[in-house]
Length: 318
Length: 314
Image (cartoon, rainbow over all chains, first blue to last red; front, side, top):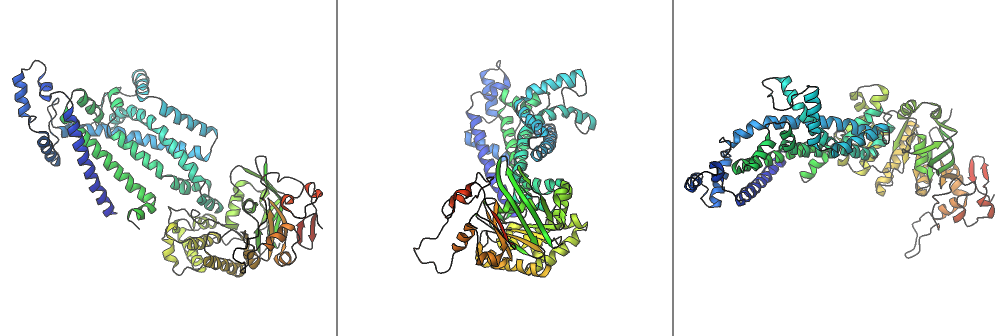
C-alpha cells in the first residue's frame, strides 16, 4: 500500500512539473506587458521598462521559469500584481470559502443521489423511479446561474432566510457560516446530483442482477439488508469515482456560483486573475488547482482499493 | 410425510410466452433427484420456482409447491422468504459471483444462520468452521479470511456448499454444480454431495445435462424437454427401459470411451422449440423419428407404477 502511494506521489510530481511548464510558458506567450498593467496607461515608457527589469521580466524565459520553480519548492508562488500580496496567502484565504461550499455541496448531492438512486433501482419503473429520473434530467439541465439567481430572489430577498452574498467564517459564527454557504452549496449540489444519481441508479441496477444477489436472497435475509450489504457494496465503485471527480472539480473553484453569491473563493480569484491579466496569480492558482485535483484523485483511488480489495492485489502485481 | 418436495402442475410464463408447463415432480426424503435436459429446457427455472427465486418479470402458477411439509403457495411473500431461507439451499453453476467478490467469506457465510437462528455471528462462524471442515477444507480458519476471488472454482463451490448447509436445510438444489469445474474436481464435488446426502439425509435436486453423472448419482430422475418433464421415474427403469423417444435418443447419444477418430458425434437434429410451449400436443414432435399426426393435437400420459412418460406410441 505504502509503495503504491509512493509511486503515485512520484508520478504526481512529474505531472505537476509538466503542468508547471505548460502554464508558465503558455502564459508567457500571451500578449500584454505586466508592468504596463500594473502602472496603468498613463505611465511613461521609462517607468514601465524600469519596473519590467525590477520584476525580472527582461531575463530569458527559462531563467524566469527556473526562478519561479525554485520559489515554488519553497511554497512561494510570488506576489500578485493586482492585490500586491503574496499569492500563497490569497489562496489560503480563499480555500475555506471554496472548500466549505464544495464539501457541503457534495454532501447534499451524495446523500440525495444515494437515497433516490438506490430507491429508484430497487423500485424500478415505480413512481419513485420516475421522480428520480426527473431529478436527473432537471438537475443536469437547469443552469446553475439561473437557479442561483432564483434562490437569491426567493430565499434571500423575499423570505430573507439566507444572506444573498458574502462569506461568514466558521470561526466568527457557526450558524452564520452555515447560512452563508447554504444557498451556493445547494445550487452546486443540484448540478451534481443529476449525474451522480444516474450513476448510482445504473450501478445498483447492474449489481441487483448479479449472482450474489441470488445467494443473498436464498438465505432469506431481510430485503433492505440485502440491498444495503450486498447490492450497494457491489455498486459503490463507479459512484465513488464520480464523487471524487465532482469534488475535485468543485474544490478547484466554481466561478459562476462564487460570482453570483459574491463569495471570495478560488473561483473568484481565478476570474480576477484572468480578467486583469495577473499572470503570477494565475500561475499560482493553476498549480494549486492541479495539486488539489491530483491529491483528491489519489484519495479516491485509495478509497476504491478498500472497497474492492481485488484492485489492491492487481496494483501490487499479484 | 415422506416427501421433501412436491411440485404439482407448474407453469412459468414470460409475458405471453410459456417457458415451463405441466411440470410436476416429487422428491422423497433423502433422495437425490436428477433433473436432466438440454440447455433452455427449463430445468433451472423449475428449480428456482420451488425456492422462490425466479427472475423478476416471470410469472408462475402451480397447484402445489410443498417444501419440507409446507405449501408455500399459501404463505405470504415474507413468510416464504423466511421459510425457504431456513429450509432450502442453492448451489449455483457459476461460482464466480455467487459469493460476493468484495466481501470476505467470514462476513457472508454466516448471514443466513445469524438471521434465521437468531444467534451471534461468532456462533455462526463456529458452525461454518465445522461445515468447511466437512466439505473438505484442511484449514477452515484461513478460508474464512479469504475473499472469494482468492479461491479456485472448486474451493468456491465447496464454500457454496458449506453456505447452503448452514441452517441444516431439508433440501438443497445443486444447479449444474460441476459444469464449470474440471473433471477431477467434478468427481470430488459429486462425491461430496453423495457423502452429505448419506450422512445427513438431506434431499438434493441435482440439475445437469450430463446423463452419465445423473445415472451414477441419482435414484430417481426426470427428463425435461421444452419446459416439460417428458419422462420420470427410477433411474434404473429409465436407463434400462426408456419409453419416450427423446430419452431413448439421449441415452443412445451418451458419449462413450470408444468413439473412433473422425467418426461424427451423434446428435438429435433440430432445436428445442422456444415458442408454442403451451401446445396440447407433443413438443418433441418436430424432432421425433416416430411422430404421428395425432402428436400435434394431443399427447397420452402414462404411469407404469411410478414410471411416468408422455407419448402417443404406447
